[in-house]
Length: 205
Image 1 (cartoon, one colour):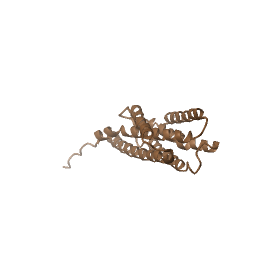
Image 2 (tube, one colour; image 1 turned 30 degrees about the vertical axis):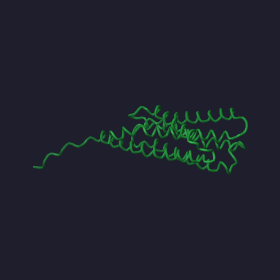
Image 3 (cartoon, rainbow, N blue to C red; image 1 turned 120 degrees about the horizontal axis):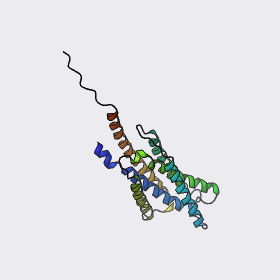
Image 4 (cartoon, rainbow, N blue to C red; image 1 turned 30 degrees about the horizontal axis):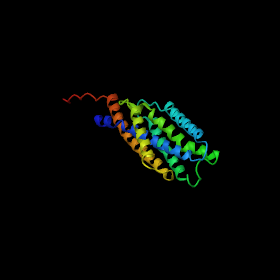
C-alpha cells in the first residue's frame, strides 16, 4: 500500500496544473472577446490571474497531521470554483460576451479565472500535497503545459468554452479522489506509528 500511494502521489499536482492552465487560457479568450484595448485587458487579466494564484499559495492550508481538514476543504473549494466557472461560461452567449459592462467584467474575472486560480494555489501550496514527493512545482508546471496545449491545439472554440471548465471539474475531482486515497494511506501509517502494538499477554496459568 505504501509503494502504491507513493507512485500516484504526483498525479494530483499534474491534474491540477492541467486544469488551471486550460481554464486560465479559456478565460483569457472569453474576457478578451472585444474589439479594442486588447493589450490593456490582457495585462489586467494576467495580473488578476497571477495575484489570485499567489494569494492561494500564500494562504494554503498547513495541515501537518491527520485528518488534514484544511486540505480537504481546499479540494472542495477548487471543484466548486470550476462549477461556478462552468455556469458562467455556459451563459456567456446569453450575456452577449463578458466585456459589455463593468459588472460583467468583474463577474467574469472573479468566476472564470480569479477564484479557480486562487483555489488552485490553495491546493498546490499545501504541504500535504507535496509530502514525500517534493515535486509538486515541476509536476504542476508540466500539467500546465499539457493544459495549454490541450486548449490551444485542440481546436476548442469559445462557443463551447464550458467544455474547458467541465474538464477542470473532471480533473480536479479525479485529483481530489487520488489525493484522498494517498492521505488515507498516510493516516493509517500515522496511526500505526502513534499507536504501537501491545505486547503479547502472558499465558494464564
